Length: 250
Ligand SMILES: NC(=O)c1ccc[n+]([C@@H]2O[C@H](COP(=O)([O-])OP(=O)(O)OC[C@H]3O[C@@H](n4cnc5c(N)ncnc54)[C@H](O)[C@@H]3O)[C@@H](O)[C@H]2O)c1
Image (cartoon, rainbow, N blue to C red; front, side, top):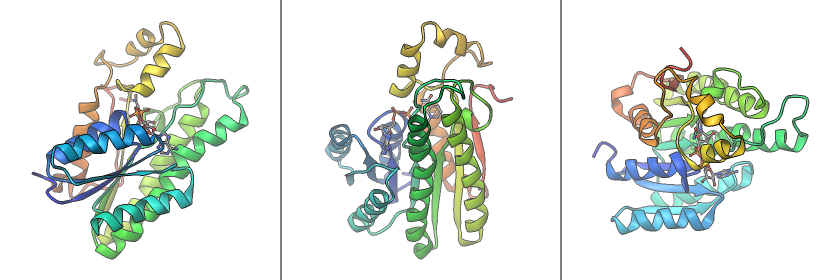
């Protein structure tokens, strides 16, 4: 029960990494707030958690909308009376296109969700954490936050930005007992990556060859890293952008 009674606010918790991490925190005694665009899926995750006796709540939220983020964090605070861990995980891939061909609306959408969304979430989470004098934030970047990915300019830009924001906010809040870290997963088996693999014939095998360990990530790989970053075992770690990538970024 490493996280007994702690309150974890998870964006994008209706699916993939966010959903898996919700169950992992719950297993360790945490209380869970899920904020996601997908109401039906999010509510069904919360129902599953509640059936296991976990105190959990769902709120519809588009992280690209500042007022929606503000309302979602308030919902969490009103429900639980605190917020210990912010997991800013909601993200989208966007279409693959060269820099010249990237449509402006696709650029705007990906940056709004992946970059502005993380900023809005941290801004509101920190308002609560500052009052508490404690807190821990994990932002979900990507291996695309550490290196270039051809035909993914909006995604790579937004994920690089997540790392820049993580470092800046970590420096600002280090003295207040609030840690801010980022994780940088390589391709991990979730619905987001299923979509990518389905979009181009043979891309999965091509990408597999870029990973020295010759396997894709599993959600457990990511969940374990997130839990460690929120655990007192990593209490002296802040501003880190942690690759979880089978050696790809080495
Ligand atoms: N799966 C991978 O290979 C991989 C690798 C590196 C980084 N990531 C990052 O991990 C995070 C989670 O991805 P995943 O693989 O679990 O994908 P996923 O598609 O399974 O889950 C993403 C969740 O975010 C939600 N979401 C999307 N846009 C939203 C918005 N505007 N507001 C609120 N919720 C929104 C979706 O509804 C969904 O529930 C993303 O930020 C993604 O970029 C994933």
